[in-house]
Image (tube, rainbow, N blue to C red; front, side):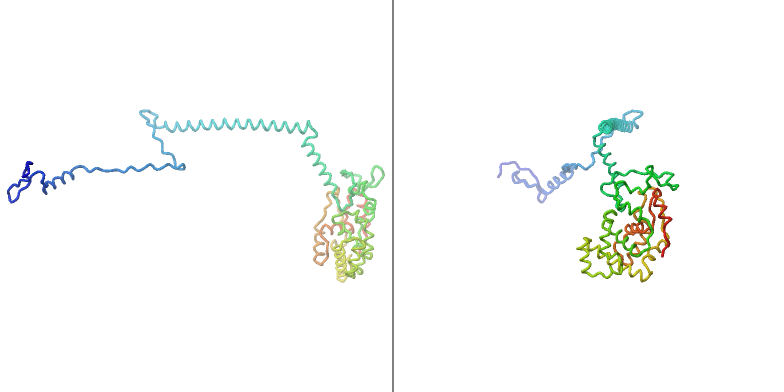
Length: 371
């Protein structure tokens, strides 16, 4: 038998059974008691600690710990007072910075003004002085740009002429005894253009050939001036048979090319003149004459204007626009409002002589009745 001491651990049929300790098997009661003891003990709760997630830069910072007010009587207002003091400090700081900036900007502006004023006053050859001279030169050139009034390249600077009371009363003589002309006639103007101004410009015309000639010359002077066109006047007369609409309308293609080659007139311009002659023949068949058609727009009475300065004379009017519109509708070429207004001035349909010019009253009084 086993030498180890045996203790009764169970009963079989009411009798205790001895078993060695090495062969001891725990009974059911003992197992149950062990289970009860383990069940009675408080369960151990295992809490898993979550790893702290990284704080993103866009997330708001955690709320600061509340400040203990202790026993302060004014404890309720202490946090608000602290916020106010912080805001006032920031405002004072921003005001001081803005004042310093304005002071520096004012100083820089004052220095710049002093520098610019010194350039303008003390240094006549400075950029500002050159700019001022350049603007004055541009103004003078702008005043002289009256292309259809016959200025030449050698014309001097424009000198503004004021209208005196004597010119308004009918006295158009200068101190030298010469008669006053329009201000666009200068001492450097071509004698041919001066003669045209004194004898033809603004005089009412009622001859169909002459009206056709002035219409052609008015269209030819676009991009040029009256002086250069008047020098080519005889060449135009020879090329187009004295501006007989009946003859020009019968020009063949060979004749058109020969006119271009012999007289140096552009081919498109020659074709336009031939087409306009055909339109004039159509108007003659409808109205009886080109004179009757063109003067009907002004009720057969010339329009008299009263301009004191050549700068006030327009390049086109509502009347020239209406005439141009009707002529274009009928098939005329190169008859824009500016060309038609120049034609009206040349044909005396409108008297645009300045009131200081001696030709203003003469053209008004010598307008013959229409045929």
